[in-house]
Length: 507
Image 1 (spheres, helix red, strand yellow):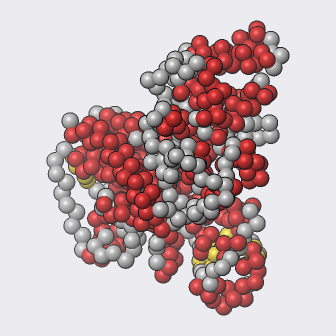
Image 2 (spheres, one colour):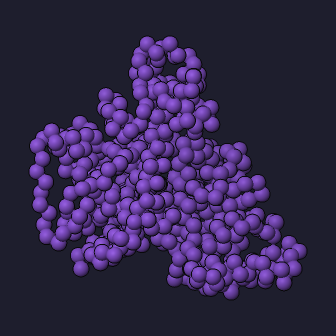
Image 3 (cartoon, one colour):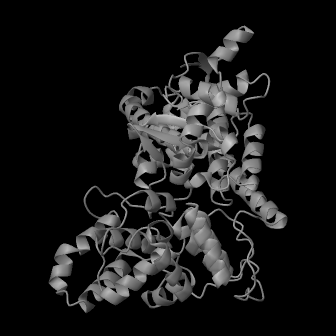
């Protein structure tokens, strides 16, 4: 892909050639684009792709993925930004071309750090999942072949021969019409996640995977390929950054639009140590609430817990001096010698504030980082309770937080569907007595900031709590009023996020 300052010379292709270039509305992005584009188009495609991925992220933490509201809102956003999404639409060459080029542009911007790669991969996976779910069944085999995935749908005769075994081994087929369900025969090694969960039928080294489960395997393949591609892109990045036309654009993209990092707060020093206990009950998300409780009870946290909780406290306003005092007081209660703390622990605290070592000013962990990295082991208290806790222990914890039985059922249903951030957002609404929190939760410090805004009168609070016996709506059902207000909030937030980027590019 080459760039020029003038207008791009349009590539003229015959109809068959255009269709051959992009045969599907979705792809694995195996081949980079080779045409010339102008810098103006480069910038516009970058902005639109970031807008699309931010919409994917925001909708994913406001709605349950795969539900009708999520699907319709995401389709609307894709259509508005003129990217490809449906296989059956005519004259899809230009939307598919935009999708292809813009993906590779953002690879350049989001390959520069682990956090950026993680965010980019997650949003691209969610986008691929959406497009695959609306892909016509008669197009699936061609897509798999073009993506170099050797998964073949078995014949009806072969499927009926193994009907009982496949149905018994695949919970996703519960309630499905067997005659309408496609089954794919894939190598055993490609279905390890399903095998680990005892959710697939194996025979002679092959797994027989229903259509409803094949998407998980396709996403794993996509993640592996994209992760490797981003690592290779990072190696060649110095050559790209040497181009003075591109470096500022890529840096601005990568530094501004994965969400607020909560590294600097206007309330630094305004939180006193005496307030932390009460704030942990009123305004801490469950992940930080359980860390604070474990610290108070055990007077110690392991390294993973200290990093996650310490950076969160830094983000809500604790100064370095307060942090040193807070941790030292607590560890001494656990019979630790003060000199041992000074020698073994105070350095790490100063390091996290950028006062030691490389002088890196570390930022608090986002929800995505907590959910996807460094899972807790025995004796640890860090991680995400919705992702890493046993369902029964999570239920007991929610009961101790005075969540109603109906509310607990809603949250556990969301957790069962792996909608961890939506579950935390539902917990926020229940503990703050609001019908619709009006934001997309993506960071523990965001939880704290929004909680304080409500408690300090910045948002209307319901006059009465929902009684425990009141039946709760299913998590996949959204009230029209709530959905509309949530989407309006998302669009408003997104427009504000992108305003600075567009202004930057127009300078």
